[in-house]
View 1 (cartoon, rainbow, N blue to C red):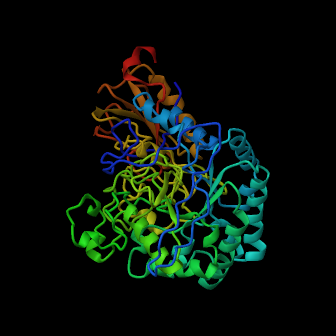
View 2: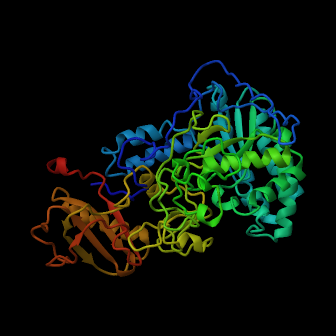
View 3: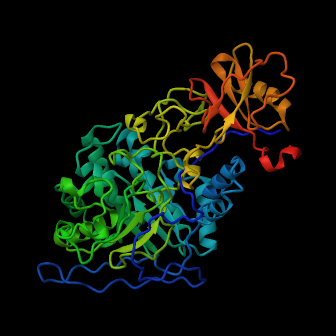
Length: 552
């Protein structure tokens, strides 16, 4: 009987990927549909700025609203397939898995090595051959933090990306440039790894260089503008736009990306509202739903649609420019997922949001909803790491994460409470989160039990010398019970202990020597990563299905 390591997740009982309470109102732009003829949608005609002079025309193409299908990343498809292969509930969630396999996501280029990689080249080549739009995320945090040196680190990184893209002149590309960088600079929150002055210098030089170098025919560039819960307070938007103005790049931008890697609600746009004051006069309107409680504190950006309108209004008044918006909807399908909306790391009750489409609720301001961050990619590690390959090395179960951030221990974060799976480092694939986002929710993936009373027997011997030995010993021991309702096992490395789980309320008969003569634990409800005790991991029996018990 094969045993496999458990996977990934989010709550979504329905087979649809649309939020359980989707925004009201109908889209006015036709959604992106496949075609063999590449086209670019016309830009909006000039409008009048508050001073009465024509606002600068946005000349950059709307690649999301064109006819090119959105490219599906092969590495994301592989991740989905691997998650399905290790999911005991795969049959019940077949439609969700099939939909995920056709969802377009952003491709994050966070290192120079990634920009030079064969994977990147092959992805661009395939997208160009299929005449499809690819979304590339320029996220240099792992580059510029090495030395915070523009000439030695940042320029070569951007050049490498540009040189690769130039090899495919017919390729349609949307660039999302530097998630979190400008909002961090605008709010003086600094960056990790370098002094704030060095970081500011690198990014104020680097962002204009990136935008000018990556711009071109068939390319749209979206500069990241955080989200409403971050910049909607006080002068946050103004301070960020002042930085953009100093960079002299708006003639090369299509607009802004917002809510990238975040969980803020999409919501409904308030009617004819540009200054954020609508909800102060009609708080009963659906656009004033405020799950994060921002309005009471003076933040009018209670959802990302309203933040987009505020951002555009202030861009017109400060920059004399009308940007278009790209909203990341990959993980904001549950507006009430967090107890505290300041929490941002691997949110436990998050759900997939609206799928990528150019059909939006606010055609005048929006270009598209898109999954900029691929679902199931970790925001950061829990204090203890799961066993597996990390960014730089192989980690054993319960190794301390070298990049642990206290925010990843928030009450809303996966891995912060007993029974949660541990979270891998930021940027690593997190199968438990993916399955949670799909709607499997509770129990978390990797569990050994379903609802009901399951008895276990356990074998106890010498301490295992390493996790691999423990897995092999327990696999051999528990596999003796195949056909007797065996659904999975836990391995307790620091005690040299195996526990085999059964769903039929009976123990194997006879109980072999070395095993307990009575149940060690009776549990009702899900168990994830074993009991959550230190040193314990859980593995489902992937070949077990109640309806096929006689065949196991």
